[in-house]
Amino acid sequence: MVRVRLENVTKVFRGGVEAVRDLNLEVKDGEFMVLLGPSGCGKTTTLLMIAGVYKPTRGYIYFDDQVVNDLEPKDRNIGMVFQSYALYPHMTVYENIAFPLRLKKLPKEEIDRRVREVASMLKIENLLDRRPSQLSGGQQQRVALARAIVKRPGLFLMDEPLSNLDAKIRVEVRAELKRLQRELGITTIYVTHDQAEAMSLADRIAVMNEGRLQQVGTPDELYYHPANVFVASFIGAPAANLIDADIVEVGGSVFMEALGMRFQLPSDLAQVLRGASKVVFMVRPEDVRLSPGKGFTVFSVEWLGRESFVHVQAPDGKLLRVTLPPDRHVSVGGEVSVSFNYKRVHFYRPSGELIV
Amino acid sequence: MVKVRTILLYLVAVVVAAVPLVPLGLLFALALSEHPVYVRGLTLANFEFLKTGVLFPGDPHRSKIYPNVYTAAANTLLLALGNMALVTLISSMAGYVISRYSFRGRSALLGTFLVIHGVPASVMLVALYYLLKATGLLNTLLGVVLVKMAVDLPLGVWVLKGFYDGIPWDTEIAALVDGTSRFGAFFRVMLPLVSPGIFSIALFSFLSGWGEFIFVYTFIQSSTNWTLSMLIQSLFASEMGGINLALIAALSVFYLVPVLVLFVVGEKYLVRVTIGGVKG
Image 1 (cartoon, each protein chain N blue to C red):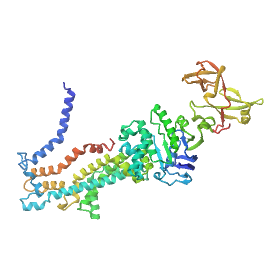
Image 2: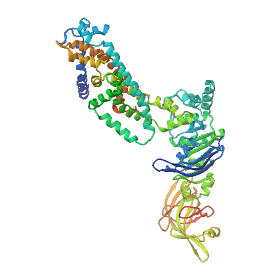
Image 3: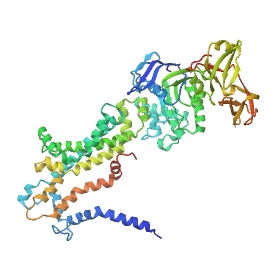
Image 4: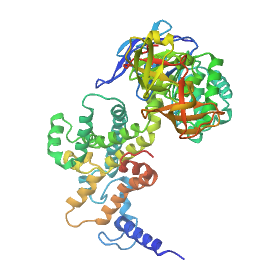
C-alpha cells in the first residue's frame, strides 16, 4: 500500500485562481485520511492532483518517496469513486467492473474471477447484467466501489461518494465503507464537506479553507483542540460558540468581559491570558452549564430526545448555544445563570490563531 | 363520442401533411404517366433508362450528350459518401477538443463557426470558383466534396460539441484512472457515448451531399462528372423541341428513393440535428 506525501503543493488555474496554496500533507500507509472543508476550499482540486488529472503548479507529490508529478493517472495504480459514480452508461455492470482489468490485458478467466469476487464482496452479484441506468443510487455506488477495488490499487481516492445517497442509506454505507477499508487496508483519501461524515470515517482529518490547510489531526484532536477559529467553528454540531471578549485585570484577578457580563477566569488560564486584550472565546454547547440564577434568559428550547438544544440570551442580546442532558428542563423565558467548563474552552486571537 | 378538438387536430394534420405529399404524389403519378406532360395512364416505360443507364437509347445524337445515369448516380454517391466521411471524422474530433479543452481563441473559433453557418453558400460562389481554379480542383468531384464539407462542418462541430458537453467530466476522469490514455478514453468511452450524435451527423451530411446542386452546377463542367441533380437540371434546360416531363419525373423518383428510405430509417437521428444537438 502507498504512502502519499504532498510538499508545498500549489495549484493556480488559468485566470489566476489559486485553488490550493502551499499544501503540506502526509498520508500514512493504510490510513483513512479525510479532506474536509466547505465548497471551494480546494479539496477536490487536491484530490485530482493526487490522481494525476491536474498537475501541481508548484510543489511535489510523492507516492512512497517517488515523485509522481508527471505520472499519468493510468500509471498511478489508483482507484477512484465519484459523487456522481461516473459509471459507463453504455456498458453493463459486469463490463464496468471489468473495464480496468481489460485495459491491463489480463486473461479472461482472471478477469471473470476477480469481477465475481468483488461483486460478491459488495453484494451485487445479481446485478452484473444490468445497465447503470437500471440501478438505484445505492447500487450504482456499490458498482463504482467495485470498479475501484477490482484492480487492487495502492490508493483509494473518493470524492464525496455518499452525497447523492438518501440520508438513511448514507449512514449504512458509511459504516460499510469504513469496515471495507479496514479489511482491505488500502490507503484512502476521502473528500467531503460533511463534518459528521469526516468525524465518523477518518483516522485523521485535514481541514482546508480557501486553498490552505487549517489543521491536520485525529477527530479527537480536532474536536478538543482546534488550532484556529475556523476549525473550531467548522467541527462539531451544533457549532461551538465563538464570542468576542475582552480580557481585563482587576485587583490581581483576570476577568473575561463577554456577552455583557464579567467572568472570572481560573488561575491557569489567567496566567496565559494576562497580557491579552481582545480575544475570541470558544466554548462548545455541551460545556456550558445552566443553573438557576440570573443573568441569562432562555430564548428557545428544542427537545431532541437524546438531549435538549437550548438558546440562551445574554445581557448584551447575543445568543449562546447550549446542549442539555435529557433530564434537565428549562422553559422559555426562564432566568438562568451560566458557567463554563474551563477545562475545555479555548481562546483565540482576533486573527484566528490559538492562544490556549 | 369523438371530441371536436381531436377532429380539428386531425384536420390540421391532414392539411399540413398534404403540403409535401401532393407534389410527391404528382411526381410519382407523372413518372408512371404515358403522356410526356400530363398525367395519363400507367406505364413503366419511363423507367427504361434503368436497364442500361442510357437516356434516349433510340436517339444516337441525344444519347451522346447526356452521361450514363449510373455514372451520374455513382458521382452523387461519391459526393454524399465523401461529405459524410469527412464531416463525421472531423466533427467527432473537433467537437471533442472544443468541448473539453480551453485554448486561446476558442470563443472566437466558435463565433466564426456560427457566422460561417449563417452565410448562404451562393454568396461565396465566385470566390470559391477562383479558389478551386487556383488549386486545380475545378471540374473535379474532390473540389466539390471539399467545399461541401467546409459548409457542413460548422453545424457538425456544433452538434457534436453539444453531445460531448453532455457527458460529465467525471466519466472521462474515471476512464483515465481506470487505465486508459487520453486517446483511449476518447475511443473507448467518449465516442460510444456520442454515437447517436455521430449517426445524426453522418446521416445529415450524407443527405446534404446527395442533394447538392449549386456547387456542382458552378464548379463542374464535364458531363462525366455530373451528379444526378445536374442531370435532371440539364434535361430541363437543354431539351429543345419539347420537354419530356414524365422522363424527368422518373429520373427524379430514382434520385429521390434513397432519400425517402434514409428519412424513414433515420428520422429520430435527423430530428436531433435540427433541434440543435440537444441530447436525447
